[in-house]
Amino acid sequence: MNHKPRVVVGLSGGVDSAVSAYLLKQQGYDVVGIFMKNWEDDDDSEYCSSNEDFVDAASVADVIGIEIEHVNFASEYKDRVFAEFLREYQAGRTPNPDVLCNAEIKFKAFLDHAMRLGAEKIATGHYARVRQREGRFQLLKGLDDTKDQSYFLHRLNQAQLSKTLFPVGELRKTEVRRVAEEIRLPNAKKKDSTGICFIGERPFRDFLNRYISKEPGPIKDERGRVIGQHQGLSFYTLGQRQGLGIGGVKERGAQRGGGEHAPWFVARKDMEKNTLWVVQGHDHPWLKSLALDANDASWVAGQPPQEGEYGSKARYRQSDSPCVLAPAANGAFHLAFSEPQWAVTPGQSAVLYDGEVCLGGGVINAKA
Image (cartoon, rainbow, N blue to C red; front, side, top):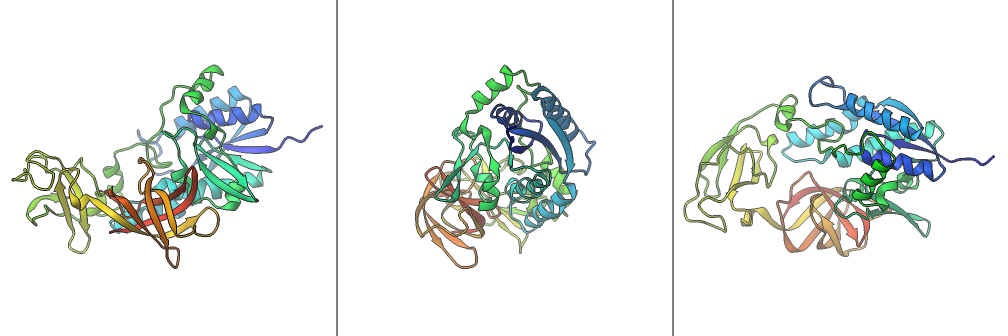
């Protein structure tokens, strides 16, 4: 009797992980589904949909014909991800919880749990790919460039990638939906989630309010005039346009690419003076940077790439921008761009690419 390798799939209740489980079963694996519950605070509220997601995941497991286990990683999430998330916000930065969540929960706590279940590999519904070259594992972009999620996975290491499968990474989202409808998955038309990793979709400022103290202060324009009051610097991010509460204020003289009625954007946060600086116009010079410094680097290959030219993303929803990498000591590096980058935000990730290969990246410390 042939041994079927066991793969444990993270079933989130969404269509991507559901189709991933189906494809693996078709390929002859012994597939087991795991639903991860990682958030317990106010879990009965209107925003947290983990119960609904579990029902969807269980229905999918039923249709595909696999077992599903409900596992609670809430304490790990709170200690390893959420505590860091709050620390960063309180320091005035804007963290990316999905990056940390993948590194600490999905590919650490979940991977460890799967190995205890006798798994040879784990799988998720991420749009990315793994390739083995000369004994090393490479993280590649998903083939659907509108859905590629390698940015969020850039902190994965060799050991994690060696145990990971991304079955939908070779497909376009339209094909994934088509497969789901073909096999009559109950969640075939379910919309993609856009909330914070594992916390779901909810009014973000209200949510942060519960954990971070408010310290209102002045909003100033580039001339230093007070034009409003902010609710606490933690609640704003660079490049933010909505929710500033200064829509009626006009900047006379159509300065710096703005214009009398041009929208306001958050450009700087002065933590020492508790001041939020805003400018008018998307193309204002204060919103543009030709370089950035990052630290806490994590490289897929285990060591930094050579100094030189690469592509990079300083935020998820952007095309790769040409840059020159200069690695520094202690996990830091400097990127110099050929074109100005818009609203480079401390706390977000700067991720490096060599074509379709994701090399890794670090946390933006400062823009220059």
